[in-house]
Image (cartoon, rainbow, N blue to C red; front, side):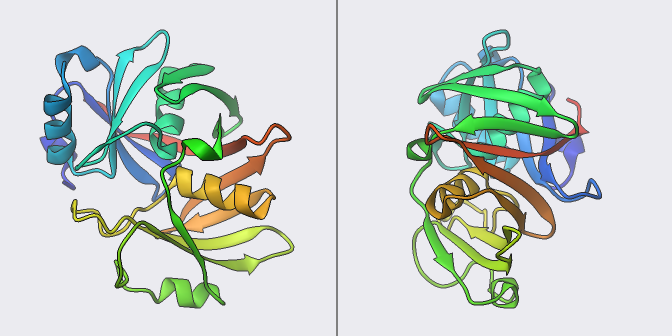
Length: 224
């Protein structure tokens, strides 16, 4: 769905991990009053109707209790919905099924700290050049969730990436994917500055306790 005028009342749309120019970012539906969709079936139906890579339902805005759905399934954790919700709700702690997620604001960037084991499995496939990543079809042949990446500047930690869910739910390519960025940062053991999709930006920073911070810009695209 590209026309936000068709988004139901009570649903805000954010763009998470926007580029330096404020463009791009991954669209996120946020239902601030999750009780209007009281069960999994109604939530899944709305997520499918919206067609965003994820939609998040807020079950307790003061405690930050979140429930996350793709168009086809429920997720225990995902990066861009939690970063977006933390920014919108202005909370320092969010509650997910995997545990507490700590959040902070640092200038124009919103950050969360998450653990690699929370992220759903991803295939992290390195390519020789950024041009090879950019030339991939959407999606590439094959099965399973693919995060294609290459160094743009290895010394500076700059990465070019694209993400392909390949799960037959209408999302051919994910514009910006916090969980995959988290896994890549943990695998490489270093902070990254990732350009993903058409121009989204994701920052990562591993911590000594094994968690990884994920940060990016968030903008309100539509207030429902």
